[in-house]
Length: 45
Image (cartoon, rainbow, N blue to C red; front, side):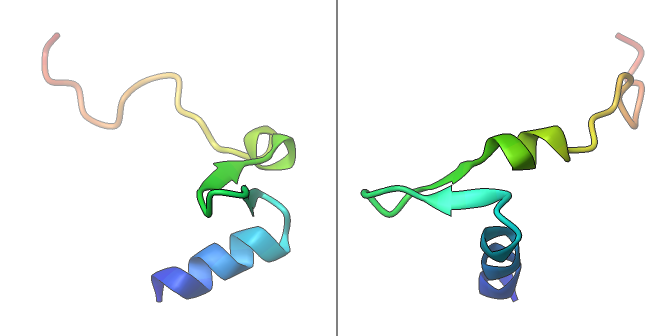
């Protein structure tokens, strides 16, 4: 299942594999990330 997710992200060009075989997020991937301004759980900090 993980390999299918990695393949999908690679196919839509959100990640790419470098010459060392490591996956890196692309600019397109960064621009499409969902980020939260506040944490999901507040631990009283």
